[in-house]
Length: 287
Image (cartoon, rainbow, N blue to C red; front, side):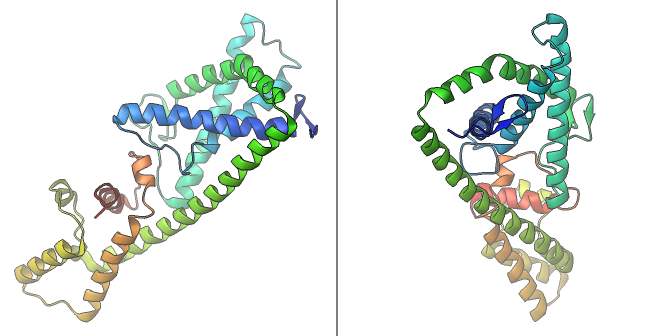
């Protein structure tokens, strides 16, 4: 077995294995929590598979840094436990903030929002969650991580390599597909925003209409256009009709890549608020 040593006497093989395990554990936790709160099964996370790499990366950073700090601080002492919890809370919060900020920078979308909680920072992190990450992270590092490593070393080299090969092959393919979907979704949202500005009232995406349960299928959208034309006594130009067809075509296309707005039901955007409402509605109703 490869034995590349890193800080804290953790090998590269152990890092790769722990990332896999904690990504899966993170998915189990997030999916269970959200599914219970939403009262239906929701595959939490951006990827299709049962893993959330944010957890994997976060826990790896905590494990490595805590192993390093343990050379200078006795965390077995009850007096130093609060120091460990505070430190892990800070690490987890910084990581969560960076991920939230980066995703919003790329997609102009706030994927989770803690603004409704007291002592939050820009809605990206909240003190109660941070403390929870600190306590949970300490328990993982102090008590659970060693058993995961014991399990890993109990596996034969061949079996371990097969497990890792299968996981990372699926993970890499999944990541590639998801990134492509996110890029497509970002493009669709921007195009819809541009078309909405050009179409004006013909875009038909007010919150009131959504609440009435009116779909955005081509037929009903055309009926709405006929109503507007009759009411305003105007005739659509060929260019307006083309814009309208493109708008509807993009809405239909969005169904295949807008699963992220179901996975993150509180996702919001200052720039694309109404468009996100439409895409979420379209995805739920598959219309």
